[in-house]
Length: 83
Image (cartoon, rainbow, N blue to C red; front, side, top):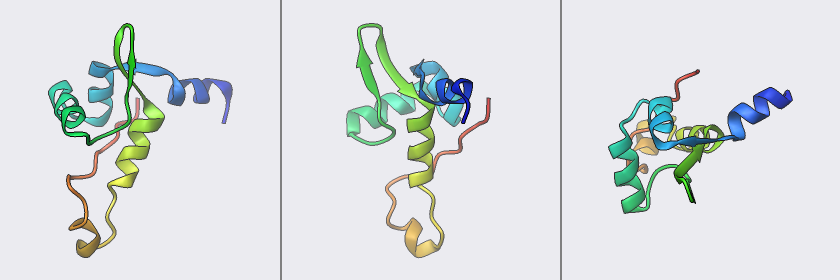
């Protein structure tokens, strides 16, 4: 992976951009944080931040390979949009 690719996946992004990246609303991310669910986030002096790496990792964790697997998950898997 190049330095530019690493920077893309590991840089902090704002809540609005993170929500757009996963195809959800910022409000959904807020609700997930309040319930202790969803992707890992970071609280900084400028607000809540995410990394694309963490968003993608969370989306991949929600992948089910059978209906029995899917029943174990508390929410639908996220769809990550390519930028």
